[in-house]
Amino acid sequence: MKIIFGFLLLIVSFIGTIFFRRYNGTVIPYPTLWYISFILLGIIGAWLIFSSYRKTKKIVEQIYDTEIEKLKSNAEKIELNFDNCEFKSGSFSHKVEDPNMSTIKLLAPDSLALYVDTTITENVIQSYLTYVDTIDGKLCKFISQSFPFDPTTLKFHVMRHNITLYVDKFDRNKYYFDLKR
Image 1 (cartoon, rainbow, N blue to C red):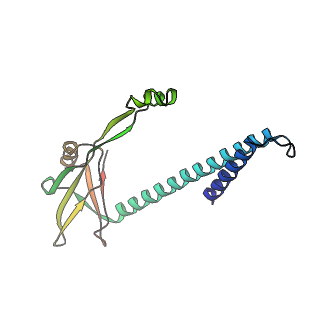
Image 2: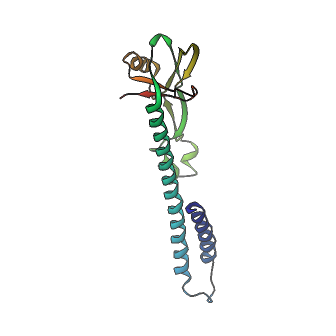
């Protein structure tokens, strides 16, 4: 509801700001005050949207954490056997705006920005593992979430028994790889 109200305030603010920016009449007193009021109304609308988004994100994270804790408390705990693991890299590279060079676009948006590349290549290192084991006479395959390090470090964590697999006793499709830090 706050998001809808925030968008409504932004729309009203946009229309009012445009109207009073070009208003030259004498019927409405203090047009500059109205102009500033509509700008403040837009700021309030943006704040409502942003705060609602943060609150929603926090609630979703809390729900996710409680579901993980519930799974951990009721699930079968499996220590990973290194021989049953297959390690894979999920690393990738992508271009992002260089924060140090973005001021060039602000200072000279037309001239220098055409000749200067303001993006950098960011390397994201991540890996995951596939664990195959026989549970209750059935061959089960579990694919982990991505971990923020390379496969060699992931192998190290598995050998040190820092990663535990939690599998729901009733639904084998619900599982979670937990990294002890």
